[in-house]
Image 1: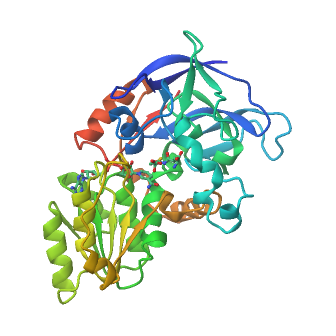
Image 2: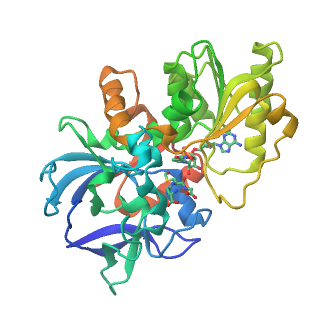
Image 3: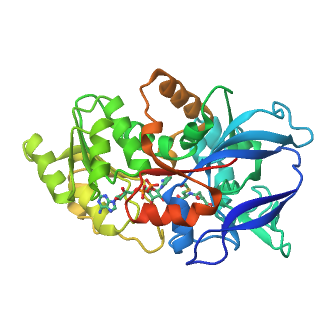
Length: 374
Ligand SMILES: NC(=O)C1=CN([C@@H]2O[C@H](COP(=O)(O)OP(=O)(O)OC[C@H]3O[C@@H](n4cnc5c(N)ncnc54)[C@H](O)[C@@H]3O)[C@@H](O)[C@H]2O)C=CC1
Ligand SMILES: N[C@@H](CCC(=O)N[C@@H](CSC=O)C(=O)NCC(=O)O)C(=O)O
């Protein structure tokens, strides 16, 4: 079927709306009419070229919510009309990692940057209407489109009364940030925590640290309105400069440093990781969530602190969350009013405004932007 989506044709490049042709769903696939999709910095990394798409054109977007319009043959458990949230990491439910409760490490997630089917890296389900060229789908999803074709392993079914234009954020930003504090950082009651970067992901790291009972949640972001929002969502103090946060954490801990630091800045470099590592005490944990050019970033870490101080660096994908278990849990927290979602959305956009929305993100004007479909 024909649809429209926002793609990058080469990198560095800008998102633009084009006409697309979607295959019919096969076994284990659903066609989804998108209702809304959040705009994550990761999709911008593909446009700037920091992260490398396996194929161009590249259909962006992975933090979506929508309604199932078609179900592939022999695909039990799925019906037309089901409401879903897309998960940027699939979970097959069968591999070693899924079986051990670590769905974020599911083996299907190892080929997502190809933009093809998980089971066949040469098979594409989306094509350019103009000339039939294969189009890569970000994380096997491509939610910057009016319709997209995805695996059921990348979808989480949700209740029909939920506002899809808000809960779409559960597809990435929320679990990634919240889980960075709660799961990867193992924040505990009474802790001192420093969050570097309070954008869409970092704001959820603030919420997570607050929910876990940290006494001090120290937010760092150069943008003033984001610091103010962080204070509303659980931060106890906010600074523009990393060194101010580091000094403050030490002042609270007899010179030792924070228990946990979390790095969620949008444009990552080794210096930020080194600052976050310097911020923690002996035996503390520095969680690195931000991504970028994974081959280019090296962090100057003093070996003595790593070894003799037993300080840890912990990377995390989706905040160590298991999509099919943690998204329903986070929905419950949203319903209870514990987890704030609408408060994270600064502005809503149309499909044709994706590039403009990323200009706004880079200019520091938005915490999360959401694209709305008709
Ligand atoms: N590991 C994972 O599973 C995932 C990683 N990511 C990555 O996480 C990062 C953050 O994503 P978003 O929140 O969507 O981006 P964002 O652009 O909304 O937020 C980044 C924030 O960092 C702030 N910032 C920039 N430089 C800073 C500095 N030196 N110190 C403190 N703050 C600084 C910005 O003002 C902004 O508020 C991106 O690199 C993204 O690709 C996103 C989702 C999943
Ligand atoms: N590791 C997978 C790709 C999964 C992926 O695309 N993860 C992104 C963030 S997507 C959501 O924000 C990421 O961490 N990319 C860095 C990377 O180099 O993987 C794969 O290899 O296909």
